[in-house]
Amino acid sequence: AIVQRESAAVAAAHAKVQELQGQLAGLDFRFSDPERGFDRSKVKGVVGRLVKVEDPNAVTALEVAAGGKLYQ
Image (cartoon, rainbow, N blue to C red; front, side, top):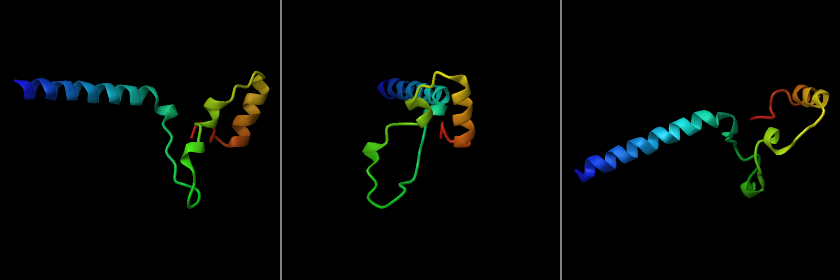
């Protein structure tokens, strides 16, 4: 009975993880170190989530210039 309860809890937790991964897919970024000894603690996040641009024309210009890499 304990094993079944724990298995159900693990399954529920796994389902929640899957749900959250789906909701946060745009924030999931994985990358290879660009050079040996790269300090990953200095990576703060996806650029598109780190800045706020007020002017809609500037947003479009940034998206074009970045070539779709703002959210990768």
